[in-house]
Picture 1 (spheres, helix red, strand yellow):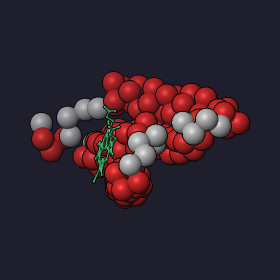
Picture 2 (tube, protein in one colour; picture 1 turned 180 degrees about the horizontal axis):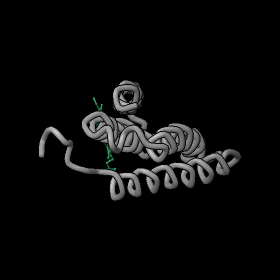
Picture 3 (cartoon, rainbow, N blue to C red; picture 1 turned 135 degrees about the vertical axis):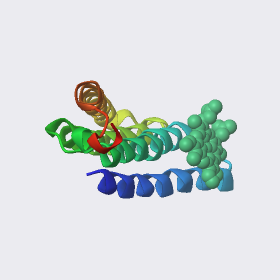
Length: 126
Ligand code: HEM
């Protein structure tokens, strides 16, 4: 789970940085919120979650981790696609942003419950 998440987060990194590069090249900064959220919620956050899941199997091997994995990776792209249309004045896909944001928040909630409930000192480190 952890390793898979880190690999996925690296793809978010490439997409996020690619959007930043594109904006700098064409001098159009309208995609800034998409760029920032993909980099932070995709790359930054999911890399950290992946490292935690890998270092602490008591957290990474739970149903909560699986739920977080799927909700975060379904919610974030949905939210970003809707947001990309919205910042260009097209609100037809606003529903995707709203659903995606709610799904992502739910995923983050599962992550936090998982950490609070299952994060323990690994046996060998005691
Ligand atoms: C080569 C890599 C990157 C390029 C070319 C790039 C480019 C940009 C550009 C052009 C903007 C818009 C600036 C503006 O609206 O005035 C921006 C904003 C932003 N970037 Fe990046 N970026 C890169 C990497 C990153 C990374 C790795 C992160 C976070 C982990 C990040 C987070 C943000 C944030 C939070 C903003 C919004 C700042 C604000 O509106 O005040 N960027 N970036």
